[in-house]
Length: 218
Image (cartoon, rainbow, N blue to C red; front, side):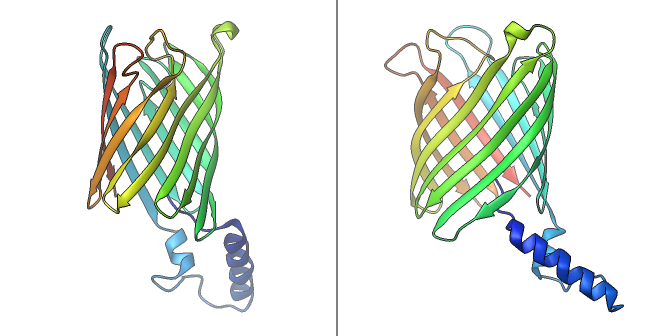
């Protein structure tokens, strides 16, 4: 999740911008200023490969685009197999030592599962520790009994800037096991603008599921 300008900063920028326009000054902001940063787009592409002990293995790509408070996202094989979703949300962040980032969203789902989904992204960080979660409630418009809550959460520790390890949990309908909530371990490292992460779910409870993730930020 990308760090964004706080809401109060955006309000101040709007007020100041209004004053400048009223005075007849140019509406362009100096390069490198907060107003200029808010106009910059940032993108990410994350691809997860699921290796299932039983059933069909699959790939789950996710693409995001952010500009200031505005968040767009597209997912495939996320809510269900052969199912896509499109999202729009509002980014905000708070804090320096304790960092809070959140994005409430609304999405549309189409494919094997069809519906409307309110969702969220959330991150709380303190020094080398981070707790992050993303979830959604899919309101199935084909069959209301098919509505469900999806969640992916991580608790991680980074002993060095380029490496992290921790715990992960997932509640999904894209695949099924004897466990309602998948739980496991993760380890990942970063190189420049690329992230690599390996997840091992359900080891010790049932046959493990492996997830290999690669992410690009640009």
